[in-house]
Image 1 (cartoon, rainbow, N blue to C red):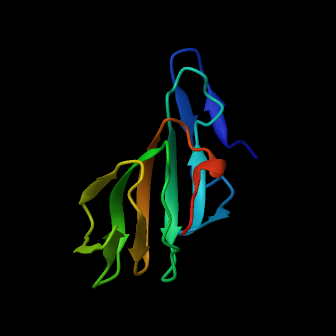
Image 2: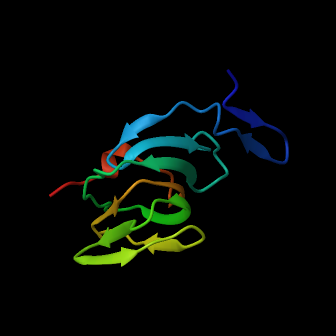
Length: 121
């Protein structure tokens, strides 16, 4: 099954074909990790109700909310904010974060996602 298609001037990722992998938030589908000239990765993540509070020491994550159940929130350090589709949150390194509620998000990660940079208290 083709997950990413490489062309001379562009790259294509079909998230419907990328296998989901468990992450602290639920299930992530990650694209462009192997593209040398792209500085980050793009994820589509299905957030479960029980996302784990975590942080990154090097990574900046930008969440764009595609779908959210009513009452969905993001915990950012000690603050809870309401989120809804069409909203975006940029999370700097060192910020403890987790999603509360079921949702589907597009996440832009800079630099490229590194699973060894997920930290838990």
